[in-house]
Length: 209
Image (cartoon, rainbow, N blue to C red; front, top):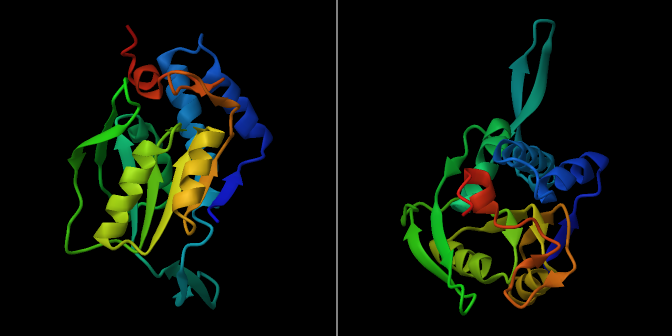
């Protein structure tokens, strides 16, 4: 089944509290989101393939490791952009490809409006970045697209998730990894995560109306 990993760490709880608080200003929201993404980056990349290399320290000959596969970061526009830099800090040689998805508020179905990947050069490992896993419709569409591209391994990283979204991914994609800081209570009648954190894109970019 889908490998679900929920981050259990006091710092995650601390920053998640700031993220959820409706009184947090956009600058505070962005800061909390970046710190949570940074905390999730380590477990999300624990299965990276490496190879042994030889090197010289100032004292002696020794060996170390180098990545043995190509990695791409796939932020879901627009909210996923806030999660890119913490991953790039740890994986500076990663490719970054963008997927634009928008949810129909009446049907809650995801529609694609932008997709940028090189058709003839699939990456070995794709890390999909989306702050919220709600119904799972957006991520399901993106994962299907990555599989058609030829990606060998896929991990999904979301700051929070709903049990319904987790179940949807679990049923359809038995081989992906899902990393999150919390699985919330449920989706409400509008398919929003409860207790959730509101609209991650609007809160990130200060476009609340």
